[in-house]
Image (cartoon, rainbow, N blue to C red; front, side, top):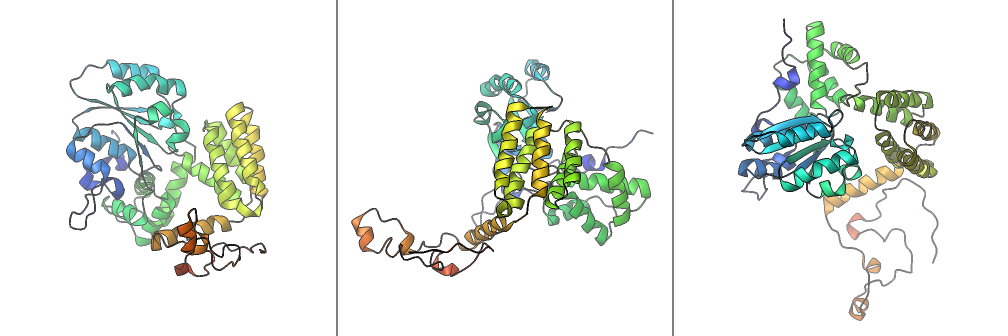
Amino acid sequence: MEEKEPLAARLRPKTLDDFVGQDHLVGPGNPSTGLRAGPLRVAVEKGHRFSFILWGPPGSGKTTLARIYARSLGAELFELSAVSAGKDDIRKIVSFVTNKPKILFLDEIHRFNKAQQDFLLPSVESGELTLIGATTENPSFEVISALLSRCRVFVLDELGSADMAKILRRTGLKIPKEAGEWLVRMANGDARQALTVLEAAERLYGKVTAETLAEALQSKFLRYDKKGEEHYNVISAFIKSLRASQPDAALYYLARMIDAGEDPKFIARRMVVFASEDVGLGQPTALVVANDVFRAVQSIGLPEAQINLAHGAAYLALAKKDRSAYDAYFAAAADVKKYGNLPVPMKLRNAPTKLMKELGYGEGYEKYSTDEFLPTKLGGKKYLKQKRPETGT
């Protein structure tokens, strides 16, 4: 008997009204409150055709949005994965005869090398092809500037727990509260993964519980998918091993990624972020080492660069961890969002003119007082949980 379409595919929304999440891009807006509709909704409703890149985590709706957009324009949609596609595939699409607009959805566009992107550029530039790229990576790192300048970039957020719960309810399956909460935590914002594991549990065991979900997860995702579908599971294990100061586990997951053909620059970038986010002030030289590893990967390449990655991974795993700078920054960022642009204290303001000096701009700056540098509303608030250096006059 032919296997029916996967649950994730059956539940894929066909319209923006059925789409869950990404309100900043596809929300309908509210004229009574002055809230504008999201830019992708406006494009779909008004039939605007242009090239763009969807940048966001896996399972956040990139493919679905591309299909909804193409359908709204009555376009001929061609879907390729940059992992396996090449110039010949682009050439066939360009030469394909149709009266409809041609839209190319290129998944994992960051995997296209410079030569492939250069080959694609003239067709996008001329309007012969409308490009929709999808990537989990910052496109400014891997997409050539000429192509990037011809595309708008839309950033997708990881789906929140409320959005994930809404998607799970649409399955019609009986999901106990504990199992649903476990599934949402495990999926980490990836709706496709949540639905895949849910379907596997129901098919294998005939019921959905936290236990059957855990069993299904092991059976479904034991192997690393070389096409990129499951690389987030292994990179997560790699980062968590670094965080837990477990060099052996970190090196194992690093070897898994290298063996599976993961982009070494992707791994190196994650290590640079980790050096500031998790090691931070505990061992400030970690950022220097991580950056040097990234540069080595760029200049040397595989297979030799795996040694540089191993060196960096072992160093980061053994380094003392201190997230205080990371936590302090985001605590400060939360206050910026909460309070807006609070007035800068007078003594800290620039005083380039005589009038400004007369008004007190910059007055008293030389008299240091550690509790008077923040805006008055924030008082002596402390973000950084670290002992500060002594200051003098």
